[in-house]
Length: 367
Ligand code: SF4
Image (cartoon, rainbow, N blue to C red; front, side, top):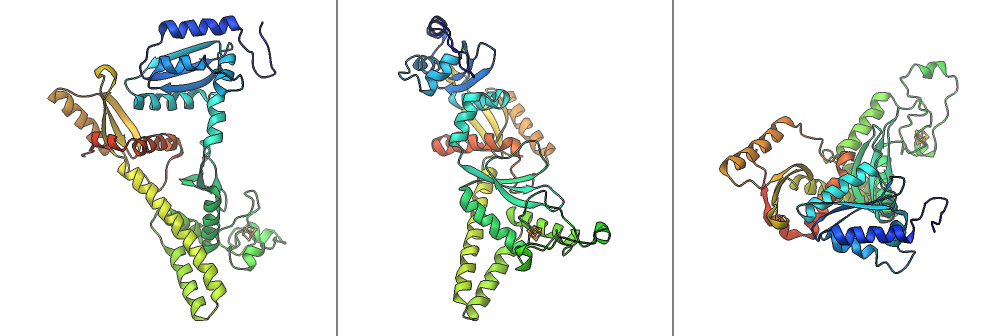
């Protein structure tokens, strides 16, 4: 009997058994990726394994109906799979399929396990910095990160906004710059909030800042986040020294904490940049049954994949490919991780963190 819920059509025991027989009779213990598909054709879940057959058979042994594996299986009417040359290749293919299909069960898992946060420079008349859990692919804002610890990141971003006089009010708050024509047509301008009163915002909402002044503060924020400008740290340090000299110890201590938060932010970002910039090499992966592959990885992104060259001619073709890559690509802005590459960057960096010995199989890219 087929049971129904508001969300899912559960498959029958006979259908479940047919899937089990299909896996048992056809799947091999090779690396690969698999998909669970609903009767309506929805891709419910994408997974990967070093041993596809063992992994798929384990779903049919889930003891508890509430287990994620059991729930997925009861909603699926088909499982398909493809083999890959290695576990690394399976990871990459899994990521690509998840991006393509956005399977419901993968999304549920990801939202549970995602611990990083990003700084967003939100695009608006007066851009502002904020902390978000994930970049939005379809807007024109700039993102920095990923970072660990949203709360700590939020504090550092507040210090940075305060130090540079950037606003932190609602994105749709009306801005009135000192040099915009509307200022003269608007008899009443809303007064700035307390942040303007205490000098922590230059006041782009209340005619206290020109467009150019605010824009230059935003540029300073970008330069700081990209490691080109130490202004906010230097001015906090100077204020701390002055407060100490005036025996304002409480204020000096508070400034020291702010300074520390900004320095931590800067250091974490430097580490990220270092990781991105060092993840550039060719990586030879031993494949299943001799299907060895070479990956050209640049700034944490897999840019090309091909079978390991054997002849001199094939090696020279690979070298030409790398040279063409260097020649044709503009250097990206330092510190800015484009949103569409973040997942792959995280995948590649965590792969080498978990398997440090694999770094021995890499060779630097030579332009
Ligand atoms: S002063 Fe105006 S622009 Fe600045 S944070 Fe306050 S409301 Fe926003």
